[in-house]
Image 1 (cartoon, rainbow, N blue to C red):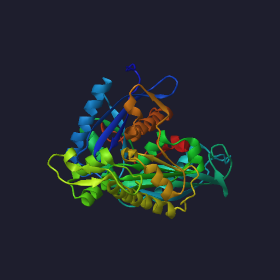
Image 2 (image 1 turned 180 degrees about the vertical axis):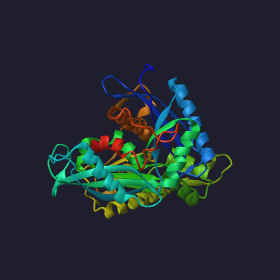
Image 3 (image 1 turned 45 degrees about the horizontal axis):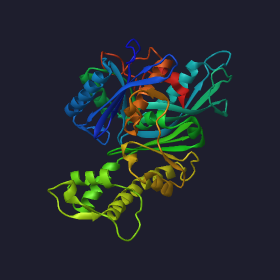
Image 4 (image 1 turned 90 degrees about the vertical axis):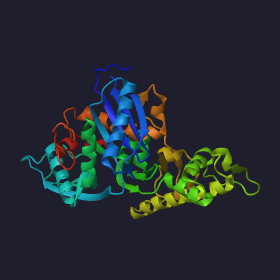
Length: 416
């Protein structure tokens, strides 16, 4: 067990079927050590959104108790993921005059111009979750990555702004306040996952991250080291199960067992195919199906999900134009043959995510199921390293950092 004098940094992944948490501590060499993970069933959360606050609070509390038992320490604050189809990603611009008489751009000018981009991008009923600068311009000189120290009179920023519905943001804050932990920051899930499954070279070349969960598929597109787009699609692995239930005419629980034990997205050869007797899985059920028929149903749904993702790439003109390929993450990505389908649909290289950038004695921390939770802990560790005095969200009367507190947020402007 790692000594308890160092701060515990905890990530919370609020899934529709499971809540997963990962707790870490920074080692002296600057690497995050994941000292414990925990998982529990999720209630009151559907498609990334809280639908019953009482059930959600109970589920979060149950998982938190498991985590604290594993690490033997109390968790006081967390970095939590946020998902759901209400998440919006859009471009925004900000323009300010450089405030110093010598016309040298200071950090406060960068803060102000990003604040201007925030103001321009904030529609009614939405909160700003992330403002991610893509490039700056000084006196019409474009393509500047970091303008601090340069000289000019007019500073502009092109930024990607990610927003979430105000009511969902408030509900999540209330959940963690009820649980009794401080919410440091809400992080859009695919950005957190990207922390540990994408490397710098992939982000520079152009890469698509597809996180296939239970009810939502989270996608993020990176290019030249910057985020281009984030999108949450309301179709994921649960729809494979429902397709099997309908196609095979079996109960949903049996369909899930068939998917887990016999599911594959690989096209099986024609001719005689092994039969699966339903009675061997559930004695109450009769009938059978061939593995070939099962694979056809699974493959069809997977193709449909990936085609929806590809349509999103078309909106930003990136279909078939990402040399870094597609990286698959999330519990749903474990399905056999999924990378082959991704290659066929996206016409780029495809690979299963491999978590990296941290250490742990707990093998479960490296399981792709925990990629988002661990990614949130990594995200939190970088926030604490660059801004050890940043204030939290919610509990204890601390001011919210969503939609305000811009100055603290911009201390990590160039992490992408």
